Length: 260
Figure 1 (cartoon, rainbow, N blue to C red):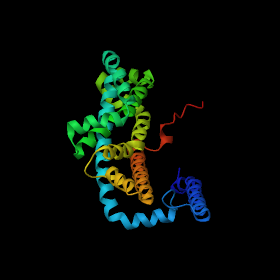
Figure 2 (spheres, rainbow, N blue to C red; figure 1 turned 30 degrees about the horizontal axis):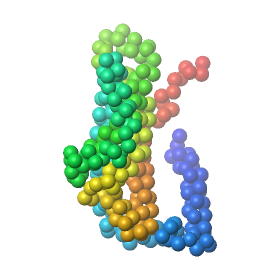
Figure 3 (cartoon, one colour; figure 1 turned 45 degrees about the vertical axis):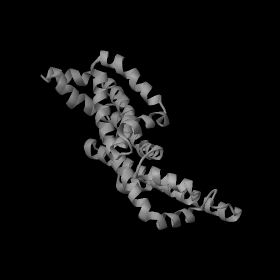
Figure 4 (cartoon, helix red, strand yellow; figure 1 turned 180 degrees about the vertical axis):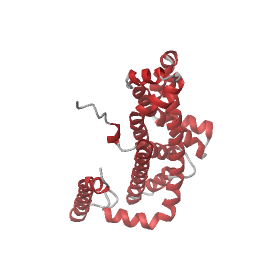
């Protein structure tokens, strides 16, 4: 798909966003809705510009925590997924525990991390990594299990070892599905980091958001929210770009003989 076509595919989304913002602005203005309840988009934009000297550094802290935690989550998730795929014993022993760990709400786990790591930044990195690795691990297992056996058969017939086949053949074929798990993790990594900060930290968007809430400054709450959304969008764009650079366009994976 050409750049012009990709750009055109996002036009409906842009139109929908602009329309929703216009409706939102008109509803607040015409209905005289107090800004302490729902501020207008223009009020949120103005407030964001005014408080950026403090909002920007807070966003930088959360960005650091989220990105580092995300990278650890991807690395550990892929390694754990490979382990779950290669060893039935490891799978039977740890997959249920891994799944159970993801069912625990962050609010019940964060106090333990505060006890263990205090209010330091690396504690938030650990939380984001722990809560972010599960989708990557699961999609790694599912992707490897979905690889057709003939890929392995051809590689082994040509003299490749099983380890070489796993790392250079199966993981390459399963990479698209693994990227699906990476995108799921990227979609909520900054929200996880911000929530962990909200429950206890010295710096970051979570603490900044808590201060805005305590002072009943509703526009600033929306400012922090939209900042998290923007950070998440940028991370997802980076993930998509890395997939394209490493694996090429999606169409290149299509089997040319599939329709015959």
